Image 1 (tube, rainbow, N blue to C red):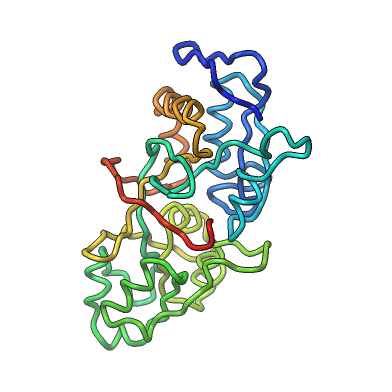
Image 2 (spheres, rainbow, N blue to C red):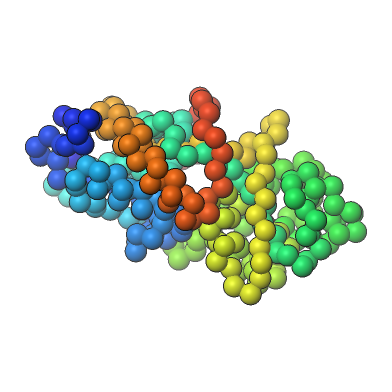
Length: 280
């Protein structure tokens, strides 16, 4: 296993023996990660690797059930370590990993197409208070289970919900299809999706202008999450190295987020634990 122990944080050099910056990632999860390394998490990982003077190596696996088990916690072929060491883009406090301080914070967003009776909507409150005649005809896409489903149900829009599975068994499927194909294609009137995906796919939609509205959390429904990198428990040295890299690369990271139209919120202290079933 490549250990980043012995890093001189002030100079960005590594102790002898470290050979690569090894990342566990989904090969088909734009705008976060992709096998062609075009995701913004790929760009940030490359930025950090460059700062350390190391080549970057990937272990690819769909980010669904079994992801952590088959990547970060999977023994390598030689049996003397693990396949990869770092997971980018995990919720701060995710209880299956030792997470760093967050390097960005974003929120779920509402996306709709201009010219389809929703042009006056400028907030989540505007959306749930639409005229019933318009509201009742809507088809609103959201992944289940996500906060958008709970929010729509709470505000009496459960019948307008068109649910999509958050974990598809198809490795070729990707979350942005809900915008690129369903919303832009006219099969949906609106969609609720994680903000970085909303901003990226809305900005490159063809033949239609899409509007992205950041949603605000409310009691019992949390839309905003701080995002960290994750390592194995016991790997505190690597965690501290990553946090120093975040500090040193804050300016170029901000440029990457802007290029991908990531809706950003201020990072605030976040101690909430994020739990998922099935050890992943």
